[in-house]
Length: 452
Image 1: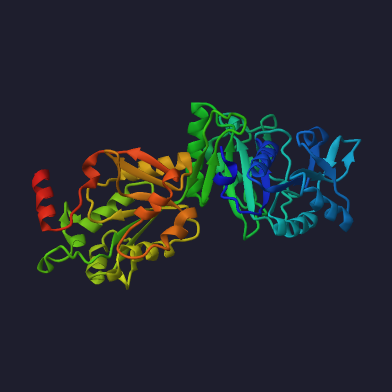
Image 2 (image 1 turned 135 degrees about the horizontal axis):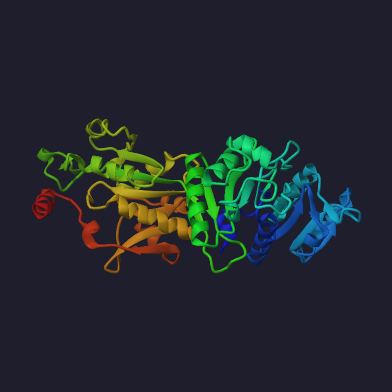
């Protein structure tokens, strides 16, 4: 479980954690892993935490209002890289007060110079696994770069009442259900996606990530996956599920995946009198149309087709499927240009891309879904099929490695990038049907004969 990797954290972040079902555990676990990776970390709160919780931190200081106190804090981070910072501890309530949001903003701006990450617990939940925020919460600093909304999977199937849920009346109002209803994935996703629920007060420029914690049993996993799918359908860019307190359980990170069909090539080995291979008949469609339909049947979120050579004919052939096309003016330079054009056409919310070749008709939606599932399970930079010990296509690339793809040149795909990052590749074994390519009419006729 590499939380900084799963959360796609940069060198300096301001992370606000809201919700219920493991906020404090997440804050301290993430801080530990960041320190192990060589980062400096300040953990804090904008509300209040129990004095007993402060003892979970190895180092705790009370920050005053004076500039000297902030200077002292950052000088301490040079030799104590993980510090819990709070306001005064109340002897009456046995709680430590939080910091003002503006002070946290100031700490973040100063800390960026030394690559310091600040993690904030931004609301309370009274030890319940699920909640909705009241009018006065959450208290999220405006400079927050990432908001993580947490829920415990142990809430599924339990009644929506005060025993199990913090502020059940607000939850019932958002989800439009009775307060005695059993909590379902639909209720959790409705609350998380609401602007007065899990997305309340999330700054415009901040990334938002739902996290379903405490996923231990197979039933937990089923509920969590169903919730994750609903959240993705509702607009979440990524969803994390797992169990912070069980190291034997793996995490899953759901991300939006795009399919890019490469159909811009010149078909140089085809007889020019017979057209281009993208437009060869295949079933009741063309080869390129077949590739699009395969993508449509899969779990990809976005489909693009890169066109180039005889682009008007290719675009016309795709009108019946209503897919978006992207024109590659420099298609004659080679496949690398189509990869770049396709990547640059994607929205910022896409987490990974799968490149499909229009001349490999036996690649199906089962293979695409297998790549996506392996990606969810591993958060790998690259996922690829392997046939008889050798790499095959199509290949999935995580967005964190797209910069490498944008640097390739000539008539090559991403194979060199796969070779460079071979230690970061997750493989799935597949049958040899997917390696069949149609490069010329001989290939095409041979495959048709074998099918007959």
